[in-house]
Image: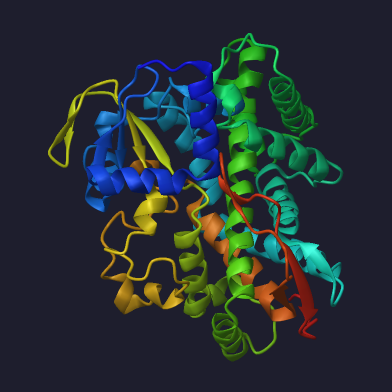
Length: 444
């Protein structure tokens, strides 16, 4: 199937302005699984939990991360052959190297680091001031992942990373992605500069002196890649791909999850009151610790419901590496598969009154009724996000400590819009007013 440039431009504008409604309309017209040929490729679009279960778990060996197509090319330009994009033995080797950084004993160590950085951020907030909560969360999670995984303290890089990510987010899924790479578009020049800026930050991390005794993930990966031999340029590129994947995935998605949580709490005071009541009952005013998290079920429910409504990774993509049958439909080898988990999360069959913010959906009794793969903010199966437990712990610690010290309220007239590009982000940031709750108990 071919499109002329005007058709491609119109398609791109429609999908960026309101993709969920357009895809939902097609589901309503064609059912839970439909095929939509696009630029000469068959694209199978799914939303039913049973179909997602087939692709991600039951028949996962027949599906792999895509290496062709518009989105795959864009992700490969940014992430190269990092863990998120790789397949087969390369992916298994990468996962074995990275997994130890997310073991339970390391998570307990990271908890203290997370609280230290969160306390430092909150100390800089002024009672009654308005701030961009999205930017605050991005800078905080960036500092945390840089120190926890790479033993590096971010200083002036936050502005560089924020600018680069904003440009890259705007370029993903945009009209320029549908056009030949040789066209000298101004937007493409900005994208290449953003990539160069990101690479400069990552290569600074790679080239920084290390004593060989470090327990951080960067030291582990650098040693492993050095032991593999080969050309230094190839080693550096492979290490770069791993680090930029962890660098972006380790802060971008968590910051968005927290941003949307603050937005929801600011517009649902009854939920915020329940959260404060739990924090007062369990913590009694002292800062949270790693061991407290299992005793804060409502806080976890708030975060889970926020990620249901605003999943940072709202679409999952695969390509069929072999013929497969999903939901009675044959998906031929080489076909693209797009799973709209956002629409699964917003389906009234699995979540009654799906647009309502209701953390009680994730209470133990009600959670049991949720079908497998109806709620997958971190994916499912063997390709579940490797940093899932780190991200949940980080988000819960930041959420609980911030809620202890401040109430964040909506600012009248502030623009709150979704930006559905690489991840689900607030398009114009998230302006909120902070009000001190008077709790400045020092972190233990």
